[in-house]
Length: 86
Image (tube, rainbow, N blue to C red; front, side, top):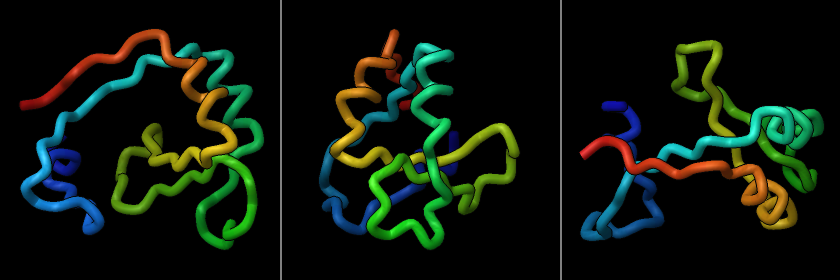
């Protein structure tokens, strides 16, 4: 959690208020969406969910990027949203 809180997106002003959210997803539908995911490295121009493990040491965790064409499908997976952290 410390790494998440310390992350600073350079495109967002330091004065911006932020919250850390946990998305609880429908597991089987998530697996279906991710079945077509690709590694971020070398994926420019591919319309798919992108996976990257940069800076993540736990092999069960990953960072995903959901393209706008897949946002509705991703949003439909959300079962619950929890605010976590400070």
